[in-house]
Image (cartoon, rainbow, N blue to C red; front, side):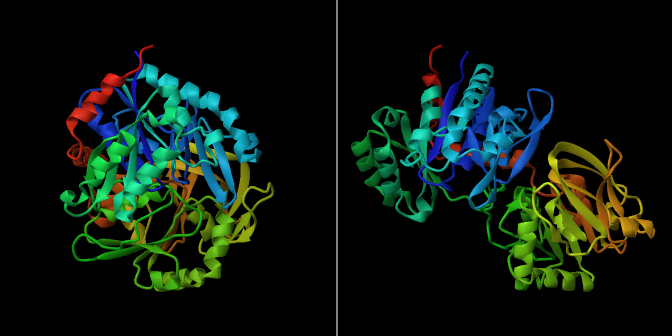
Amino acid sequence: MTAACIMVLGTTSGAGKSWLATALCRYYAAKGYRVAPFKAQNMSNNARVVPTPTGEWGEIGSAQYFQALAARAIPDVRMNPVLLKPEADTRSQVVLMGQVSQALTDMPWRGRSEHVWPAIQSALDALRAENDIVVIEGAGSPAEINLHASDIVNMRVARHAQATCLLVTDIDRGGAFAHLYGTWALLPEEERRLIRGFVLNRFRGDPALLSPAPAMLEAMTGVPTVATVPMFWHHGLPEEDGVFDDRTSASGAVQTTVAVVAYPRISNLDEYQPLKNVPGLRLVWARSPADLAAADWVILPGSKHTSADLKWLRERGLDQAIQAHVRAGRRVLGVCGGLQMLGEALIDPHGIDGNAPGLGLLPLVTQFEPRKVVQRTQAAFADDLTGPWECLAGLKAQGYEIHHGHTQVHPDMAASGESSVVALRSLFKDQPLGWHDGQGRVMGVYIHGLFEDPAVLQALFGASAPTMDGVFNRLADHVSASFSTHWLDAWLASRPST
């Protein structure tokens, strides 16, 4: 049996494709269907570690990871066969079927398409063969006419799967009907026929005021507006593509302010979503020293280009602000690239990331290696943690690693007996995954996803965040209430014959 394919396209980036696809994954899974998500190519520095067909660990975009959880499926690399991880404005690392491909990374953008299409097609066909429904997400807009000839993520996928396509637009931005019509009009006729419904997302106001525009648009295109989805604040789903919510509101009276330094190549920022849901916690995305002034915590998150982000941080005086934060006895946590920044130096003999002096807050040195560490991890915090981190002493945690660098205590400091700063140790390989400064103020860890571990969140803040399962259910209820169930169920009958 070949799965029915429902594809979510957008008039622009940020229109709500990922959000809607996640909701549809849970809606159909809740009805008892076998569901899988799919996005042929994603561009994001938010990645998760999942199994590969060969039994190794690989990377996919975080959006497809969460969509798989919403679909009650086991995430695997076939759900996002190509992942582009931006390292600079004009350069991205290419991950194919979960593994970094240097050959594709070095290849010109337009030249990659035919090289990666066989893997995309094979992955999609395998998912179609194993499931009742595949919910496919497009990228950007399908009407980018400069890219149409080399398209591997929008209409080429739609044609291959003969997918039922929804075109979603963000009406809160304005110009929604022009965006919908213009996108439809720029598509070739054979591709227009695949567009089965328009979706107005993030609507605020009286729906009656939309009339007669939906009817007029249908008269011009033959495509009905099948849903008007109301704005849904604080839905709990992590943001995608490095675009994050700058709102700093907290639920209830603010008791703790956490500032995450938002450097240009920030990665895996989705792991901080649980902090936005903790009562009494105010999350701030910091780009200047003023943003750190009132912070109880400072977090240096992951980075796709550690040395460049460290340079950016220094240019803005954030290095001095972080030093002052530590002198005031307040906490600093570095995660992955943030851990590397906290050390004495970054050493790059292979041209992976770049050499740079560190912030000198931990007695560590990091050397970048060609082999990328990609794995899920279980670890335990040291029993002798003191100060602000004492609440984590002896606690077991789980998460994932994605990094090039290998970090160890600075040799001179190790020789002087300062090697007893291990804060976190892997349970798999009995190797250090985290260090602290001995006074309990500064800690750095390689493990991503700590705040997604309920035990860690409870120990640090005495609180819990809503479960992702609850988030998925609310999304599905919110979206399905905006559609006629006739549409959502009738589309399943469009499964192509095989």
